Image (cartoon, rainbow, N blue to C red; front, side):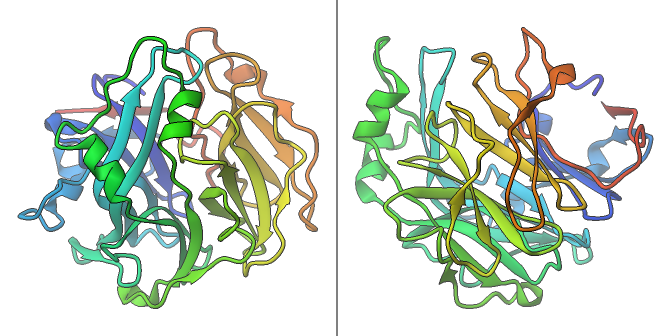
Amino acid sequence: MQNVPICANCHSFSRDGKVFGIDMDYGGDKGAYALTKVSENISISRDDFITWNDFQRSENPSSMGLFSKISPDGRYVISTLKETSFFAMIPDLDFSQLFFPIRGLIAFYSRDEKRFYPLPGADDPDYVQTSPAWSPDGRYVVFSRARVNKELLEVIGEKGYLEIGPDIRISDLNKKYQIQFDLYKIPFNKGKGGAPKPLLGASNNGKSNYFPRFSPDGKWIVFNQSKTGLVLQPDSRLYIVPAEGGSARRLKCNTAIMTSWHSWSPNSRWLVFSSKIISPYTQLFLTHIHENGNDSPPVFLSRFYSEEFAAVVPEFVNIKQAAIRKIELVD
């Protein structure tokens, strides 16, 4: 990426690798999201941006758009909107923040209609709904859900963040401010949604379950599990469960500290993920997934390593090598 003086982070692609989307704080708008066609040299201009704040703009809170994902056919983008986040900056290089939404609904943007819609069944105000994922055929969405905790809303207040002392660490905050998410599955139904159903093996287990990702062949879902929380959890580990639900199994590739941010290869045989086992900065690892769901020991992707940078939120893309050479922001 070149000439990008703003925060650019979570990104995704359509299944054929022809549509690209990325969160970018363009024009000072935390809800700005760039959508463009994939090319060798991607130039992102003002015309390529939407803003999640155009969804129910007259209502509070505003929308940053958390964990956005492009649909497999490239026609929709789904995200967590109208969110309130529980946030604290921690003076610790290893785990520098506590972050999870405590209010939010699932909504989507239609590229054909250029309009925003809530997803019925995933927009219940009594729950926080987040970290959505598409099934490979685009017929279903799996997401994390937890009941809204009014005490957490009162703690965070209008300030929007938690002030802590210099000796406080994430373990201290995890003991005091807990949340457990369950995975739910819902039909997309051309945007009409439906009744959400808990995913067996990834719900009602006394843990927090989040970041589901379907294998492209539709057989499996790999998700994160930890005692509490959602992002940057020391005990987060990867679990695999049949896509229709069933018995979940902890993957062998998990490292001893923070395994997260995973992505399937287009052929459903490889999984790339991030871990903090080597340094405080997350680095990338690879595991092979057999058709029966068994995985191999992790392999460190050393070519992505840097002592000064973190490698996080990796995405497998169904394109040829060097199909994207440069991504730049232009006026």
